[in-house]
Amino acid sequence: MELVYHDLSRIDEVKAFIQAWEDGSDYIYCETSGSTGVPKRIQLSKKQIEHSATRTIQYFGLRQGMKAGLALSMESIAGKLMVVRSILARMELHVLPVKKNPLECVEIPLDFIALVPSQAIEFIENSLGRQENATVLIGGAPLSSGQHQAIQTYWKNAFQSYGMTETASHVALRKITSIEDAPYEALDGITFSEQHAQLIIHCRDFVHGEIYTTDCVDLLSPTTFRYLGRVDHVINSAGNKVHPEALEFKLKQHIAGEFMIVPFEDALYGQGIGLLMIDEKNPLTLAGFKTIQGIKTYEIPRKYMIVDEIYRNANDKIDRNAMLEIAKNHVWTSIL
Image (cartoon, rainbow, N blue to C red; front, side):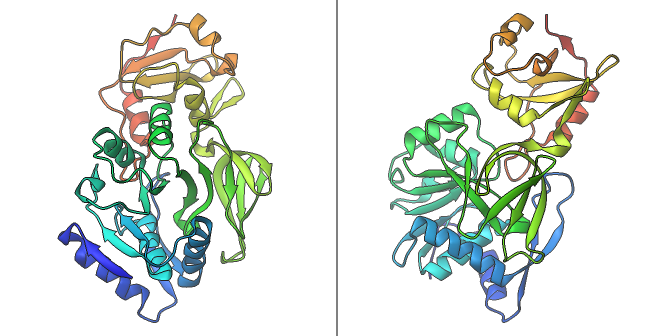
């Protein structure tokens, strides 16, 4: 692997990981993304990481002489895996700054890049070209409808990933096309099952052979599923379980600007469906929501709140816990 640094401040972190990878030990320490709270420090075997990297190399046909872009922090499993893939496939790895538009400093076309959604959109909006033929791996957070459209228009080989630190990066991919709700497909050696609609990932690389997740899915086959949302985000309204992420998907073509679904306390139903949004110009009516295809009566938002910002964490995921605290301490407006 040849290293090309576009950000000299990253030399130490990249070298430190390579030294840890080649030190003869069997494990690497990683931190989880903290999607459900405080990040946890976990231990992954190098064999599991190597097998994960090999699956991606084989899936995309990565090989010696190709140029890859490292635009993610080495603290993340995604950053670590970009280095390991480059080592195993003998690619030329371009180490980029970790910022909104890491590709602006690259004047040559890259073959393989991993980005979070905000980085991809920032590049597209300020693009000087050069990277339109790259294979792009998008992870870290769900895509909004606008992001999905922009990415599939600019890149013909962009893929959205599903995975976590515990699985040593992604275990499933879906190509970003005009079909926004296309299912995720397992990589080689990975299968899925479910328990109470929560995804179980099976792989012989895992310590116990399987990982039980808190992700709710629509399991289509042992190798394909549609993602609905996290079980700890589920809103229970009058006995009906509403997945905020799935409802946001249904609404995103009808609401301008950033928004999210959160619960509010309701004396009759326990929890009501609330809408946090930035753009106050959205014409919201109960009658209007009822005309949206696929939305159930109990999913219709009954109240809304205007906020200055939808907070996101370091992985570009909505910080739902932080936004819930904001919602608890501000006044809701009824949707009529």
